[in-house]
Figure 1 (spheres, rainbow, N blue to C red):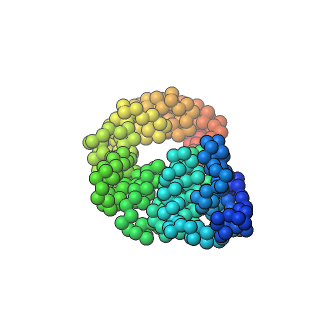
Figure 2: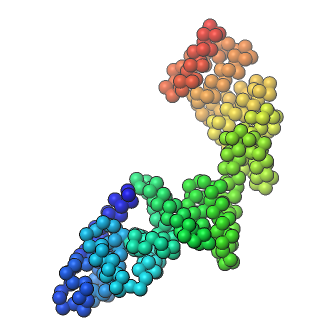
Length: 365
């Protein structure tokens, strides 16, 4: 697993001590005992580190060691020791991780991972491990980003396989998918979390999340319909959304849907509303111009393309559509100028380049 390599980097945070034969814990003798370096340093700095290191420091160190290096030479011995000293290893890992998370998130994560490696069937510890793990994907441009997300999703999915009523895992899955921009999935998991809980405070928190993502989920669902060619259902979704909230992107996709069923007047109005709402991207100008052209408003289409080219100079698709319109209305000379210029663009697609050569041959220009 790639994440094993990531967690191995935390072994540098461990130091190893050997207990003397006169120690109070014979079971700890003859084996190097790990201790989390920051615990030792903070104890020295604050004066709380006694001459005898507390057994709790070694217990934490062993859990952290297992979390950092699942193949460590003495892991089986550490597991036996932990089993002897702790009634419930996973419960200990969870409670200790929660206690230290605000001060040292990495330590909390290592404790939880150690608990997870030793007992992956403990739903609460597994949930906490996943909950602390996936935000790591957004801490920096880390090469393990996808691994953090994938591991967390797998763990949370397994917890609800173990217990289909484990509401907090549904909620956390909703959080992950919302952050990924997969709002339909997020909404589905939030809905399930709401069904599985009866705590008023939790219900209110879930409802707040649903409110946050619902509009984005409606947009995503409408895009699904557009992608499937189901434009009427896309229009229903988008008009329903726009009746409650004016969103520029919703107007744009509504224009696309209307355009694809030949309702160009409605399409034009939707694109105009998108512009009025502050949306400015090249696809909008292109699609708006296409609807105007198909509605026999060629000069208006050229005007929209001109506006688009002011904001996105030398955009190949805008220039190409301008050429097509000028050819249609007989502006052959202007079309030729634009063709010659467009053929000099480095970012021209093979499709547009091929079409331009066909046009030059067809019109002898």
